[in-house]
Length: 125
Image (cartoon, rainbow, N blue to C red; front, side, top):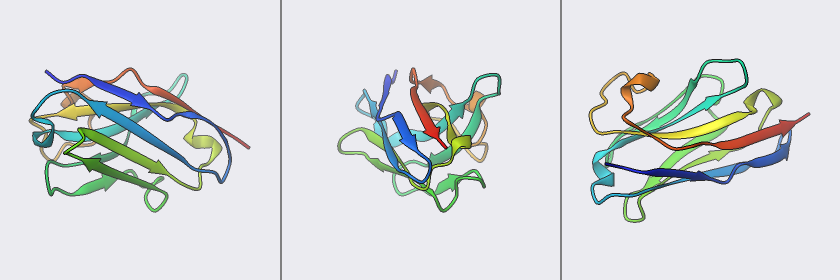
């Protein structure tokens, strides 16, 4: 069982930056692939970024590649999402997710077993 708690959201002007954090409980954090998803009002939850288990790769949706960076600190049980050059269309609730079994379908929300409550990111124009 893993519990996830996000923080770091807020209101920022277009072009600004935010760093989201996700704190995970549990002693086997390094064995989990971790992802960030987002959900805007009236829209479906969408994949943002994922980072595989220890030493694994990172993946991004096309619209954030080059602006967002996902990273993890297994010693601290943390995963981060550094968001630069933010745009109004990035406005959403951002959710952290974890999976012990995920493979190539890292972009599918249904593949993740554990979810945080989310943190609001609002980008003003």
